[in-house]
Picture 1 (spheres, rainbow, N blue to C red):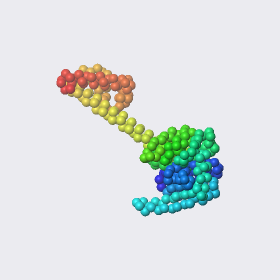
Picture 2: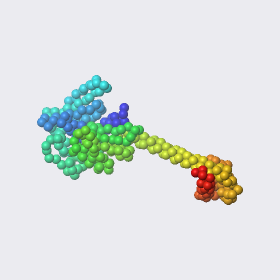
Picture 3: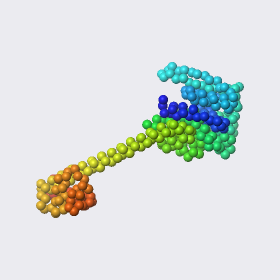
Picture 4: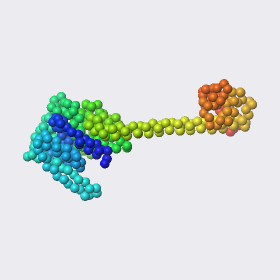
Length: 322
């Protein structure tokens, strides 16, 4: 089972008692899952919701039954092309209360591609002016058209809507919870998406997927630890490589001075550091400084080695070895 399917199955087990939250969740489901020319029939006020998720189909059925005491028609279709899929189609015709459902949902949002005036201001809504109902609305929208990527790979959540108005309404609900939701048009649909692990954790908490939230947090912690370890290893490797390269260059300069000029013409400080560098090839600047008497800091050691490098460069120029 994918991470996204696990989230939806968890959401389908959430028990809701308040009718206002049930209506809000149903609004999210129908606006996203049935608010297109195939999902809602303007003439007959039919509603049709198609899903391959059996727990989701049962949840929508139970919500409609509890709110309106009607039994949606359920059609099961099996596809044998490529992978075997089972689709569940919930149909509410106007004769069985479809008109009543649509009229009620207009109180929550706006018309379902029907030419009517509507006001989607939170202040004037009878349902979505409560935090619990906004959470339920986002939960329904995610169940109907949402997906979340495997957190082991990347952090990405999206909800696909057929209507730009629905997309804006979902964004408005997300913004109320300080979620940085954005909308992009893709193949005629409108995709509301969230990125970054923190946004996804907040969204899962809002819609009530707490087990998935903990799983996501565990993945984030492990990935963070791996990234920290990699950064430390890379930093140590880079420092070690830098130390080795500098040591090799310094030894080459000192040997060149020894062969072409000798150490007798060097000052005591330079001769002492030159002999120590040849003796302790793998030592870093701090360790070399501790071998000196009296001890010298890293900057002092580096200053003397740079002087030796300048002497070696001058000798090369004089001998034409540059």
